[in-house]
Length: 88
Image (cartoon, rainbow, N blue to C red; front, side):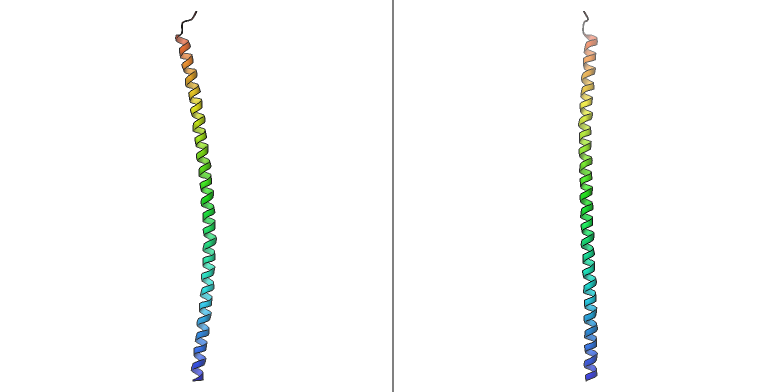
């Protein structure tokens, strides 16, 4: 009877140890997941900031290009108008 009790206690001790080890591994995995998630969010934020910056630069360039195009059209129209204007 004492031998059976000793075996049960040993099995319970081994089971408790295994559960404690698994719990520690699970906590480590969840901690690593949290770290990776934080890194992923930081990378996503950096990507979005870069994409926003590039989009703003493209919009500014398009505005500048449109302004230059309007100046050239206006200059061409003036030159064409001067060519057909009567000269005194």
